[in-house]
Length: 266
Image (cartoon, rainbow, N blue to C red; front, side):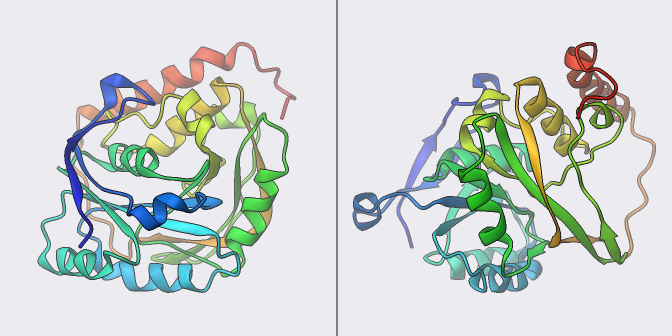
């Protein structure tokens, strides 16, 4: 098992959002090697049953210059804990108390060695050519291209293809991007990271808005290379008074740049 640094924090995105994590130390051999082209960041909370297909999809990638950083967001499920322990070595495991998906993504990106990061939810998978199609495209794009994404292939409780695209105006009203962004780490930092106060949903949309507010645009690979799982039996949610605050936070992110975006601008 990799050694860990206890109580390490990083405020490179937003000091107010920093969380205490147990971050695996980089081995001396790895430290002497150049960083990978991309770090795959996987937040995981009691999602051990999904990790085998996720790891298979990563093992099948035709683009091989990547590392895997899995963030255990305070999992309690014994099967998940056993699975994560077994993966230690194939992936770097970052452990933290449960703080939600935004905090888990931020922790994983802080621990990443690469200048490009890819956020992959633990219950999703990607096609073998995903990294080969997206990473070189971002590497060769102008500096204002902060992220690359693709269309979604729905799985689980739904099926079909969900087209994704980048348009600043449309993004004010719905998230036209994907949760699985291949992005420059500098873009994440400039956007202030994911908002860790948003634990009830919409954090992906809010982050997309924050990226645009920071001056970045996205480029689409018009292929369904990301398999997005939808729960077969979503749990009914009671009306939560916090939902209005979640929507309000997202609305505020959009409102800060909405007035500067002409309707026809993409």
